[in-house]
Image (cartoon, rainbow, N blue to C red; front, side, top):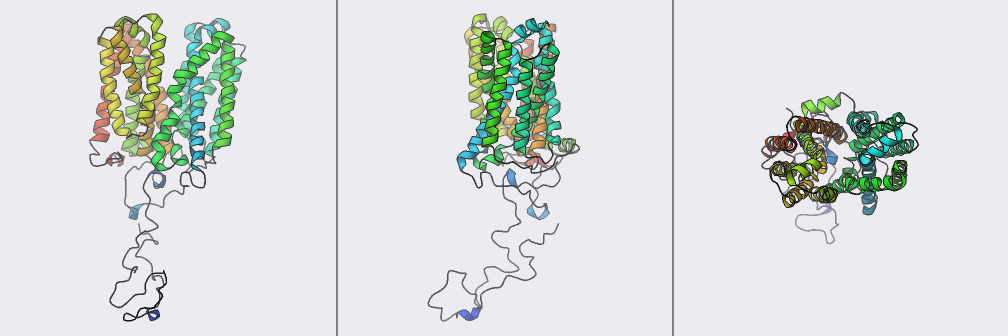
Length: 488
């Protein structure tokens, strides 16, 4: 399309200084700093036929300036054929740099609080079941139900948020989590607890989908990778610190105390978000038809969703049964497994921050390839020492998954990061349930080693998908944002 403001299309060039103010043979004794006057023999610095050195209609590089047209398009059309870019404030504009990082820390605390809340019942199944008169299997619904709800609610909340300020949306979701945990702490029966856990799922899915792409709006572009790693550092840290601390509180003061404590932490998080987050007006209104359109039309988003499913399903097919694998295959003493799992979590935190600043495509290729090898070896090699080393390597590699798939989605659809993130979060949560189901079938019908071997096969499929869809298609692009974004 033709741009009326493009350089070289002005009907009348801007007025130039009159040549009468100087002479080619006798220059003025005191020249002004303004551009020198034209002469008959020298070309004009700006003319109707020469483009200005800095055209205002040319889009800036980076995800903040992506065109607003066609939500499913991930291609890189030239400036002559794009719609005007979405008007967004520059990250960190008008504020001290520390405020942007403080806001990132507040969002990370929110992720930590929500994941702790989601996984808290893992250590409290038996006391909750005994107190409310349900079996351990039924009590396990406190973990399964929020995961499924989070998968459905990630796109629903993203669309439902409309043009609301994202700061307000995040605060409402945290407040919902606070209310859910306080309701669980006071619940007279298991039905109330389960209803409260469904609300936790709504909070987790919505918060993760919206918060995952906020780093680009809070810090300068060169720091986006580290800021995203800090946001998603709340995921492994919740496993390492949040869940064990909640379990300890449950042992000391009862399971109701643990739920109440997480609700109190949510109030602290809500205060931090209100104080530290700047206003974050919606950059665009996402509609339901745009979500399937994004999958159809943007090859990069489609590939990212597939890779997320393969990696996360493979992970939880194996990790759900890590205890029997360590005991039966590696020969680790049962008394040492909790310590080893703590080491696994610490390694996961390190892996998250190692992966954050790096290219998402290549990181996922390395991660999925390493996990293919690790899961194969841990299913076949005996010995406590070998099992310990492999478990720590497992944690280090998988720690980079969350931040890398989020980075993939931001690159794949910079014009619609929330929509792309919601699709990834939905698939992530569904894959957790699918992985646990597949692993259980493998263990029940084959053997314990069949679970990690099946996970290794899925990791190999993920590595192959990354190579075919991302790495091989972008050999000449160091930033990984090459041709996989073109329409299919």
